[in-house]
Amino acid sequence: MLRFIIRRLLLLIPILIGVSIVSFLMVHLIPGDPARILAGQNATPEDVLAIRERFGLDKPLTIQYFMFMKALISGNVKSLRTEKNVMEEILPRFLNTLQLSLVSIIISATMGIFFGIIAGVKRNTWVDNLVMGFSLFGVSMPVFWLGILLMLIFAVKLGWLPAGGKGTWKHIILPAITLGMATSAIIARMTRANILQVFHQDYIRTAYAFGISERKIIYKYVLKNALIPIVTVVGLQFGYLLGGAVLTESVFGWPGVGRLIADSIFTRDYTLIQVGVMFIAVIFVLINLLVDFTYAILDPRIRYGQG
Image (cartoon, rainbow, N blue to C red; front, side, top):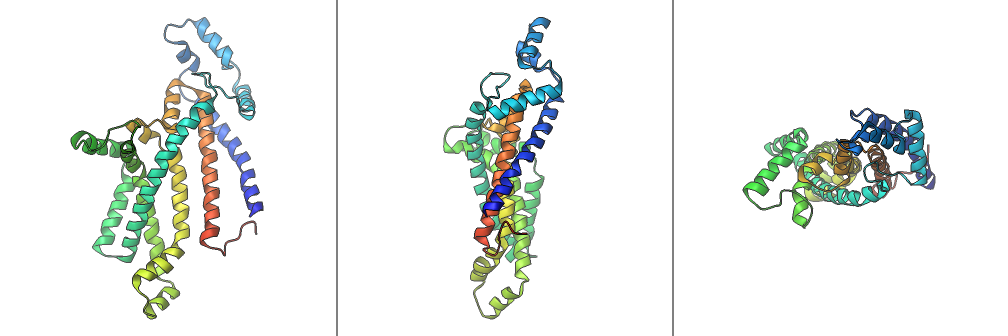
């Protein structure tokens, strides 16, 4: 297990290098001059040139990249817009995104597993068709459209929930449901598929032959053996929620890291965008590592560091 942990952590190095190169090139392909945006509309060419020299934006891209990596390793990457350490801006926003993602994954995993079990048990019935129709609807629904729709119904028309922002527990309900709708649909489909696969195993037929109740068979034998692929999906989707909350946070005005990166794109804050993307990549890899640990808990036959 220790060898497995060390090997996976060492993999972070090439992953971060690759993410840093891709994010660096992507942000420099964004149209617009950050120096001119920082200087303002009434700035003179001399002012713009001074800002470029100050932040090293007048240097070749290769030199800019190595300057960024040097600052990153030393932990002293400054935002172009605020000139603060970027982690001082990312960490508080990340806690908000983490809160939103946790509530969202709890809702989506609960709904997805529940409806997936029902669809698997009631296979080829109208219940199964209804759940699969809901899953297709959830996967196909654009996040921004669903967010606006829920806002119109529950905030504008009914007045039950706030339309946006962050304050009481009510503020998180609509963005969490919006963010988790597609995830719950994916989990439901995966749960149904694995339930059906386990149902065809010989030991399940034997359990039925011994007269064991269907409820006990489902929860003790079927669900337990179908849980590993479901945990994989839940873990991966949680990582996607952390990194893919940009639209949801923008629609509902949720002060998360996704919205921070989106705002940084508009202001051409290159350093904050790059560090934000790399930070999310690290979190995503660590979540996958945690999912792998969960495998060993669910199935003691799994051993890491072999082969």
